[in-house]
Length: 502
Image 1 (cartoon, helix red, strand yellow):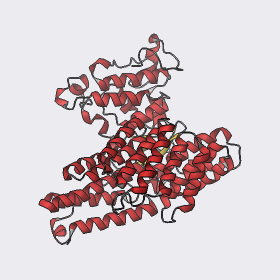
Image 2 (cartoon, rainbow, N blue to C red):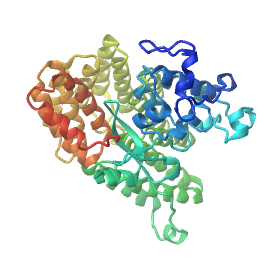
Image 3 (spheres, rainbow, N blue to C red):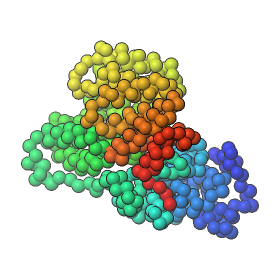
Image 4 (spheres, helix red, strand yellow):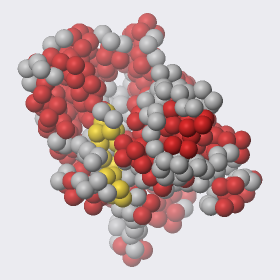
């Protein structure tokens, strides 16, 4: 735990001066509410939050404005009286420059939290509403947006939210914001997606559907094609509505029909997880992907299970957990049929996890293995039909960038962009942003800024979090050379498409 010492580089706080940084409102002279870190894991997390906040000499009001989080929520976070979403922990850690401490303690608290809320005997549960349950990190949303007038709007009081990119403490992070606030900011394109209330198809409509499997399979194909053109922000709500209707139909089916529909429902869940990840909604992505894995076990389809494990590996590395990704990719390879393209997919995720962990030799060896396996893999037309040598080389370019080998990364992405079909608009934006970051790493600043500006245009169209993530990295890389050709223009164009706190 951080206490009683302040984080490295922080300004220490004399215990006699604690009254200056009151927990409830941050006003001078107000005695802070007592914390009870020994009462449970979320009490301990709240204690750590207060310690870091005070070490940074910030009142709750000041931190609330920096982090776009309601001040009253911060107080409840510190006292373990309100569930803390993981994304809130990430934002607070970033704003407080806590070097990952708050995220690590959040993960520990989530693991240690009892699954049965009735087993908890804490002051917060008795007095307020039991923040220390297993669902603590996945319940209602805490962060908020600050509109142009500087007024905070609690997401707890506004359930119509969208996850949007926001400039926080110099970085671009994806946070849930009330849709009306996004609309008021002028970023209407980012307000297009809201997670809809689940509605189901009437029984009569289901009866007239003909073959429900073919109906929903065709819908899924159309959604995938649409996503390639306009991005997931516009298609995720439709997918989730069809998923709800499919689940109703599957529950009414029996025997082989039920298994067939469940297999398709699993693919819907996986696709929904992918879309949610691509709009920056990590929690929803994790939820859909976990449901997909559970359903794949129920169907007994080991191919499907191997594919979902590989997707979970991809999600883990993209959300900052490469060690977990390596384990999941290994499990995916173990589950995949030898000689199948699923085995190649698993090895590719193993390779990139090694690269992110800084294990260049292991990553290079894994990519060689992937190419060897691909050369003798079957082609059943279902799994990994898109896999070819060019795809593997593009994946390796991403790993080159993770390892700091920007020359090879830039060459790989430039080649991938030249070969990409025009219909893959969102993917072009991802490749452009990665290429720009790689060129910045080589020192070709004007080219990096020019390519980055192209990626900004596609990010505006699609709202893809994968593009924004790379643009954020490019923005950080170019910040020290803002006077060079094209850099100021790129950074200004990026700023225009993200939300800014007051």
